[in-house]
Length: 254
Image 1 (cartoon, helix red, strand yellow):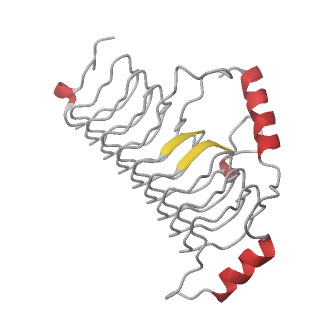
Image 2 (cartoon, rainbow, N blue to C red):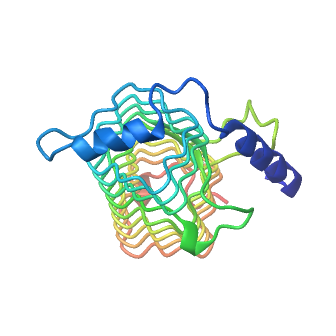
Image 3 (tube, rainbow, N blue to C red):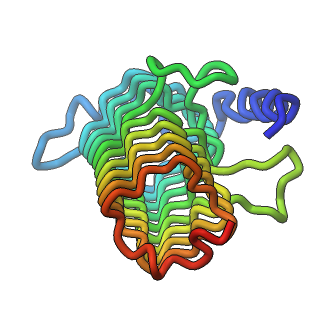
């Protein structure tokens, strides 16, 4: 994506993430429900419209946010560890320093997540997705340098949409991310950026890796059996003990 396109995207994000008028609850009501929750009865926001709310620094641990609309919500420094976000909508949500450790984001929509305050990714602002479940999720975001160890992306849709690139090429960016042990089986990673990512022991079997950039990535002990790596770039990648290379479509063709 060009610098001009990125600036345009950030302007769109800033406008789109403004507080919404139609949210089902206000922030005070949300805090009250969370304060009244117990381990046996977690706070329930399932299916609620929380669009555009500033939910920064709120503790949503183990809360039920399944199917919730968090479009453009500010979740800066929020704790969503262990939360149920299955099928939730987090498009354009602000997630700097948010903790999604062990959260269930299966089937969720995470398009255009805001992960930094500027064009450059700052290590101190990155969110955490360690052990998160994103199976079947639709994800297009910059998650460079993010902790995604053991995350489950099975069947997730993360490929660039080449028919809708009015603002430049928008794709998932896992550059320098920690993806050790992550599961990408049968996921779509078309044109994804995985430069210098840690993919040790990752499962990429049956994944669509067309045009993906793995330059400098560590794929030690990774499983690539049956993946489609047509036009993918593995320049400088570490493939020690990687499995299934003989079955990878397009591997070594460049």
